[in-house]
Image (cartoon, rainbow, N blue to C red):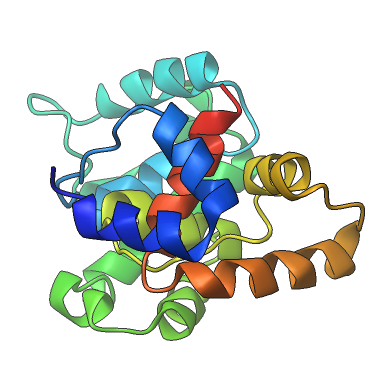
Amino acid sequence: MLNQAAIEHLSTADPLLGGVIAKGREIPPRPHEDLYLALLRAIVSQQISTKAAAAIWKRFQSLFPPEGYPEPREVLALTEDELRAVGLSRQKAGYLKAIAEYNERGLLDYEHLTSLSEEAFTQHLTAIKGVGRWTAQMLQMFALDQPDVFSEGDLGVQNAMRRLYGLEETGRALQKRMLVIAEAWRPYRTLACKYLWQSLD
């Protein structure tokens, strides 16, 4: 099993979490994705249902025949009206152009970004209009499959940890407690979060 060392570490360091992992389904490592594409998808998916996001993404891809790959130059050449016609808000249309422009400037270089610390990576990506801390963390966890990312601001992780550890705090106090608990999970905090999300199903 590919995550065996991580699972052993997490289960020993935190028996409560170990119980969640033992009851859960195996979470295999994911192949690394195209970061630029993953960023565009993340913006399209923000604050709407999965179903709506999939429909808009499909329409967005149809603007780039025949392959459906949104080359940065082509995204930048589209008008706001063309982007809005596929179901994007004016705000999101602007964010997608900002990502395309960032990529055109060579600022989404895979080698460089994967060498950054979590904090540096987050700062680098949140410099793009429309990309927040949460989006940067999700990209590290899912698109890059980086092993030690912890998203204390994620609602799902908060709910799962509240339930598992009986946490009563809210807001910043809750996030501080979560960070303290998650210290024991290093260097496998990403996998811990994935099992916490799974426990909510």
